Image 1 (cartoon, helix red, strand yellow):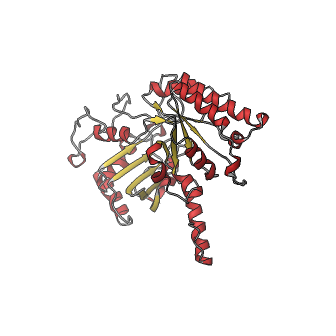
Image 2: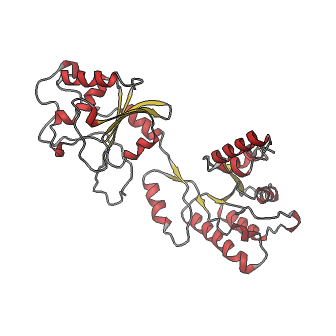
Length: 357
């Protein structure tokens, strides 16, 4: 056993660009995470001395060395199972090789079942203990002190600090989109059952332009929709509704023709319910500015800052500096902004034109 581990580790060390401290085993459902790794080197299991070969569908059978974010990682894209016919020593062999390569933190994943009918496929869980019911055990047989003690401490089989960190970096609130006909009540109740805060509802924005119209046939559906969202916010004790002031790029803004009456009705309903209406910066920024100015003294109206939208559509002003004191929600994303920046850079390079103004 020790000789095989050493032989495999020496083979890999000679070809690896660095020795990661973090090892990851990508099981069922998480194989796609490998696409997020900036790969420096990868090995097919068939090319690694003494390595088993993964026979399970969906397990690629590759050992990957690279960067996940800024962290150097060694990842198994596909694992081995007792039911494939391997012994437990063979199943755990890659983990022992990882240790020989200097891995100090091991992140394991697996597909797990549960008896709670509320669990949905794809939900994440954190394992804090387990009971081994296998007929065979990887510690059976001669013990090698180089690999560890005969009877390892199982009172903390899974690192409490890593479990706490996983919970810490997870999310603790949701902001679902309100969709006509969708039963969000169940989702809201489930979120709260798991200790999540329902921070806001995001109103539909397909008909956002219609809110500026005085034509009742045009504006009433959009206004009725927003009022329904507010009714649901009240029913579910959700404190904020996020609203897009506009949708689309084809418009001619005329400050003298602004029509606020539809918004007045929505704001009045929100004020009655004690709900904050957060206008989000989007395309058609003049309409956003108009609303923020019109309701500047109304404490029912707040600001939802979308970083990606600012990068794409609202680069004329520093919105956080302008409305930061009214900030109640943030949407942190790059949207398609990174492509816009690249496009602008290319235009500037070819035509020496400043597109920042």
